Image (cartoon, rainbow, N blue to C red; front, side, top):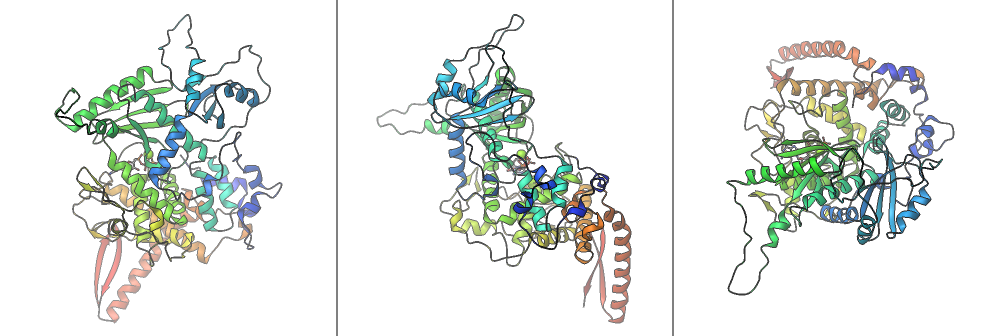
Length: 580
Ligand code: GTP
Ligand code: MG
């Protein structure tokens, strides 16, 4: 997502309308008639009886409970491509013939779609029995009976009214910046950004439904398989528009053969054997890739990336608009998602900070959707968690301390993945620092981090000597001999460090020199998200002046005090460390 330059904001003349000194809750501001914010307010309440309010809740349930519940909901749900104009009442009445409906919503993605959750799974069979496979004179349909339907009007009499549809993508940058400029404080800005970008209840439902539709296809080969979402779709750090990572879980299939039956015999399935787990994974994914490509309704652009470290099938699910990555034999990644889910749920500041850092990194092209030498969102999240573990008092516990609270031991492929799953066993932090302070300190901390010497380790929550010469070393929390940011080049790391310093400087400037209400300047988080903010222009010049002055001052000081100076080069910046 590209972020437009500052010119846009100045043209909008918005910042004059921003925060007043009187602190008012943002909700009240949003409800003032005639304000920009009101016009911008998204229709958060979709049609139908979907649960709302998800956005503000921090999940407190166990990850596995949440996953099972959502999967079960998804199995009772269908996806329907609808005519552009449709009467919602007639639509619901028609579908109710097949069984009672629990909830539904509409969304647009190159056409109008409805997601309909029935109360009972059996209703789907009735709907499928009342559905026919289309045939055209020119083409032949592959008769696959999925839960993805096409609804047509019988007598072509189009309805006049459009249904209200829920948004599946974040609002435009222009609108977002308007909202942010209108916030009352930097803390408000971070919370607004979170609220705007986080996955909505409907988007989450659509993600689980998409996995469930793919599971139906995989079940043709492996009837007991489960397709589970993982990564940012479920770890509470997902932004609207993020990819959908799926994990084909075949453990049930494997375990079924382990059922104990009494008697003198042991029955085994006749199977084909291959030389390694990796080859088995490649073969399974290869067949599923073919299946999705040839038979999967709405699955397009299927790519089999089988020689990657973690083999995967990548495709677009057209109807949901998700870019999907299907993997198997990837249980540790699912466990990492659970760990991040726990960290995201422990303190409301965690997600707000991660979202801002992710948006900041994207705005400055530090991250990219194309694989390469860039920092990934996963690595950035680890850096924020590590930083929050380093606060005093800590905002987040170390992974080792979560391990001591664990109810059960968990070992995956020889790696100790034990940590507490029950959120109520973890004590809340005593730290009361504001988001504004944390954001500034985050940039300062990593702007001056000794990346040349130290690694980041959330297991112990402290810096450690780097075991190799990778520019950025973030220890994989479960496969502890691996570096999750091995791909990051020195120049990308340097870019991150430079931008972090610059951003710390901008926030510091604002502390002393807050733009006045009438100054018409972007402020706070907006200044950080704009690549060419006016206060950035002066940064390089002021920064070099400031460093030069400080260097000379320190030199003189040390000569006076007869002290020894060590000039150490940390990540490209000359800093002085003084030993007395
Ligand atoms: P976005 O898709 O960028 O929003 O974030 P994401 O967290 O989903 O990242 P991504 O899609 O790249 O990866 C999905 C999941 O795979 C992550 O959440 C991690 O659990 C896991 N993962 C990604 N990269 C690595 C890595 O380098 N090492 C390990 N062990 N796991 C990774
Ligand atoms: Mg992802």
